[in-house]
Image (cartoon, rainbow, N blue to C red):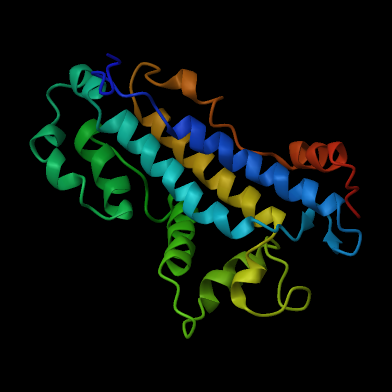
Length: 223
């Protein structure tokens, strides 16, 4: 009989991250089928863009659990106080887990006032507005912050409702890169190159790569 619960579970963060990158490409390919969709450089409407925010946060939480809370990690860092409260830590909010688990495991963690955590905190806020959607609540600040960074389309192109402004190829690329940067930073906190081989697995999408993806889909950026 197949063992459905091996000592160290198969990782899924890499699979979810691969799906997130595929989601970006899928949106670009959809642009090729719509000659009327406007482009602003490498930014276009992404039909499936809203899904990227919950998926990106899921990638991060899966990676954090797999590499900081697993039996394998416990055997590598057996003296950490994390193992005494692991059951409680499972119920922490994702922001709490992100800050406290590395601190308990490694003695250091993310800086709340600096990247990449600042972007991650923003990503989580947007995710929360989506998964706890209330039609009467408009996350003006969250949308404006991305608009001011030229990541959204903005109301003058897409219009209301607010979530349409977050359905752009650059929004999806931003979500991918936020998670990639978070994973890269967490890897850097581990000693002696632990997990360093995973850095390339969770690679973000640079502007040059984005342009290549557009061109491969026969979508020519307009600038």
